[in-house]
Length: 122
Image (cartoon, rainbow, N blue to C red; front, side, top):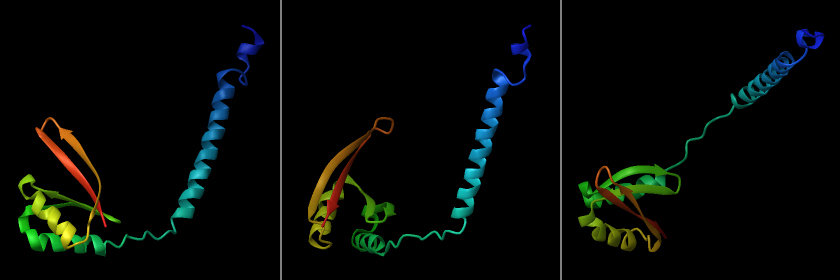
């Protein structure tokens, strides 16, 4: 064998040594990030408006509407098809959601369901 192939500082050995240095640098960076973010206070979003909208809907329609989720500036409710017009009129006339921004659909073939999604604003 030639001296070059027996040299511990050639070929894969050099690459492995360099990879270890990169790994050490990444570990140092991750530790710095973890230390910097450990003092952060996580602020929960205030969802008073979203919960207020749902409470008005649920008091008016009882079991006809179901809350799917609430996020800041967004609420998703589920309404059975036979009640959609009644709920839509309430949303427009009582809650002021008078702008239908978009309508889209999702097909769930395994459940034999097509979901229609209305994006409403005021």
